[in-house]
Image 1 (cartoon, rainbow, N blue to C red):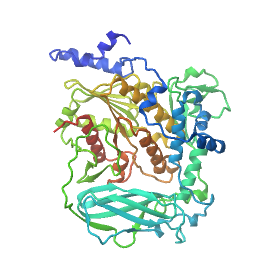
Image 2 (cartoon, rainbow, N blue to C red):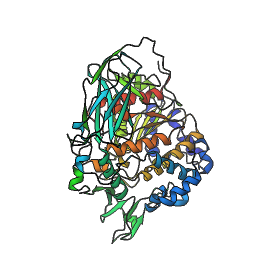
Image 3 (cartoon, rainbow, N blue to C red):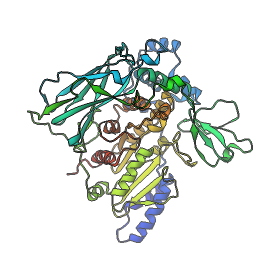
Length: 572
């Protein structure tokens, strides 16, 4: 883009305040154009292997890697099957993907076919608080143990079950997530950090049995199109992968290599598509016997009761609590990442400022450009901001409310907030042709100290192979690294996945176990990158509200408080 156009993109921040009417008209026009990529700085960005030098490449034994590849397909083979081009992968990316697939390998039962009665039964399981008679203080570690049993009451000798755990004090609206340790012999330990005094209760749930997880793994590997899409005008099926039983239209993104295919309409050309959208879900994925492994109130997100007392009393710490610093980049990812106290999220690594008044939020966002990229959980951030910040007005761009893109501006304070969906395979009933991939939008942003970018890529990827998710994050991460090379002062925030409701009919597509796996991959892939995290996963596990893909308002408020604490670390 020429210099004149670049200067135009800065008009919003340079017009004299006395020209208020001209300011409003100019801002609205330029920002609408900006939303569609017209005013971005389209400086060419070289895509070279050298961009990976800042990322810690996993150490890998190449001799061992060759032996593994002779026995099992390489992780890129699945991607090639889906339409990715093998030449687009760097050696570092190929090695990293292999390492990640090993990292998330899940323990499995010793036998491929385990009768239902031999599967995990929460009714026959009880947890025990270890050293429950000792005096606990704030800052101590609490450990809980349980042994898995089957429906016949027999102890199990192998692991692989998926558990969720938290400690909480209802009277204080306090809570914190626990860390699960699978000994892979039927015994599990759960570790907690005690962060507040008083009566602290333990809550543990069996989300999926190890036998149920084997069914979920099979669906992910064998039924990769169990969520499917369509293109209208003359309705045809679309997806990341389609068997070539009919002529295909190839809509693969030329820059990122992200594939997308539709069957060609019989009476129209491929360019005649008007709309695309989610068409539906493959039915009858589970047999009658398999359904028994996913029964509400029996073995699906079912609470495990204690053996004896399920709580402890915690005394205040005899030692002074170390002061935390500001929320800035470069802090490690820890677990637990924080805890709730009186319904406020307290980080374990930095001092979160709570933006309890519209004036505080307005001051923080003054002169800021905020880009929110992701799914409907990120749209919740956008909706919260426009509800809480006076003068932040949404421009009617004529886009669907649930999908966007959406744009809000506060002319007086030079604040711009944009929400944009993350691109395919986002699952809405209809979406426009100008739906863009995050990587391509990031490549057009100039960045700067007044620019904040928040990204989440989670919920819509759980029905698809893990390999697809790894490749998407590799593309997004590359664009983030290049953006930070162009302008290191840009703040990039990654919002993790959050847990959700899991009725039996949703489990084959959106199980928390699917989300847990891709969330683990995402955290590993951004380790060592100069970004910050908002840990929505622990914030939803630790809270008392029922799990929901769209968390309640108080949880969103706490997520925004942490987000803005990074945007405005110097706030007093």
